[in-house]
Each structure stands twice: as C-alpha cells, then as structure tokens.
Length: 142
Length: 137
Image (cartoon, rainbow over all chains, first blue to last red; front, side, top):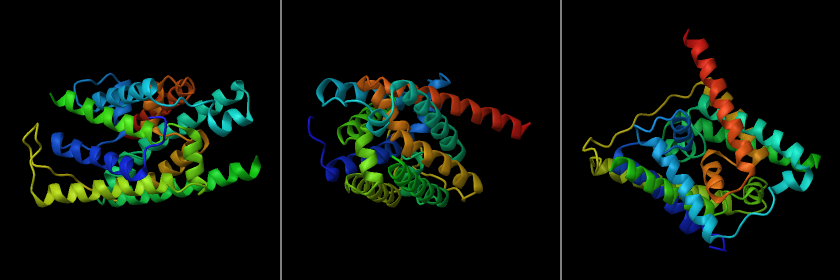
C-alpha cells in the first residue's frame, strides 16, 4: 500500500460502498451522520458502527501503508502552536457546516448526488466551489 | 449482523480513502488547486459508480438484504441552509484539507493532527445542536 491506489479502482470501490450500504440495510452512507451518532454514543443504529469501520480501515492502512509526514501546507507554514488552533477552527466549520447542509463529501457529495437529491447537488457545487476558491486564496497569500 | 455489515462497509470505505490518499492533506490540496487530476477523477468515478448502482437497485426493485424492506430513498429540496452550511464546510475542508470520513481514517492511522480537527468537529456538532434547539424552542 505504499503507492496511491489508482483512481479508477479506488473511486468505484468507494461508490460501491454507497451501493452496498443501501442494498444491505437501505441506509444512506454519510460520514457526518456516522460521527454524529458515534459522539452521541448512539450505537443502537448502524451509523456509529460505520464510523468504527472507518477508523478500523485507517488502522489497517496505518499498519500496512506509507505514513504521512507532517500535515501539508499547515505544518510547512506554521508551528504546531498555530496549526492546532487552525485545525480546531476548521473542524468547527466542517462539523457545523456539514450538519447544517445535511451532509458532507460522502453524505451529500456521493450518496445524495447518486440519488439525484437536488439539495445534495446544490451543496456539492457550493462546497467544491468554496474549497477551490479558498485553496487558491491560501496559495496566493503564502 | 446489521451492525457488523455497517462496520465492514465502513472499513472498506476507510481503507479506500486512506489508500487513495484522501487522508493526506497534500493530495487534497493538489486536487483542489488542479495540480493533480486524481481527486476529481476519484470523486467523479465514485459518484458515477454509486449513481449506476442505485439505479440498478431501483430497477430491480430490490429489497434490503438484511432488513427485507424495499430499497427506497427520498430526495430533498434545496434550501438556504444547504448553501450556507456548504460554504462553511468548504472553507474548513480547504484549510484543513480533510473532511469527516478521512478524519476517522486519519485517527485510525494514528495521525495526531486529526485529534485537533476532531475536537473542532465535535464542537461544531454541539453548536449546531444548540442552534437547532433554539430554533425549535
């Protein structure tokens, strides 16, 4: 797992996960819902278990794959004392924003769009557009 | 059995996210800056596969294998909250170069920075719950 998985394998496998959860359990795959259930300790439903699976998938890769050095542009630019508050603030925006929008990159971006939900199409266009603009803005400021 | 199934699907999802570099902030950033087509091709092929798969389930009038209920879903009309929420989400996504699924996979990999993002995520959820309670009250 030292080399990045080819997109034409990784993408379809990710898409099949959305289909699998729908076919097995008739549930929408969304990491935000999974996190929300997990942090509220709602382990009666299936979504918190999906979250535990996500972590487990990371554990497997952590044992077998190539580790990440540092943390991207943030640790290239700032010391840890600055990076940590920036990550916390980003996490607040990600958490609040995803809950408000009814999903994140998986819930709206994959599951919602695949179901042709108009709200998901609007949300996805908005967060991709915003993220691209912000990334270029950071690039211009660095 | 249902929980195990969700766990296994989550594990495949988390491993795939990790292996395709979605837990590596440099991969995300290069994608959003169009330096590397990987992110967009990865996302588009995932979405295309999910779209076709769900259509097939609908055409077959499939029943959920573990619950027996008919496979069905509802769609949502766009509202202002979808735009506002996604703008906030997009800012956080671009700055931290990570979204909720990969945060979980990063934790599994033992990337310590994910703890900071997770702390923020939980705080964001709490703020949202307070707002929802205020709106409902």
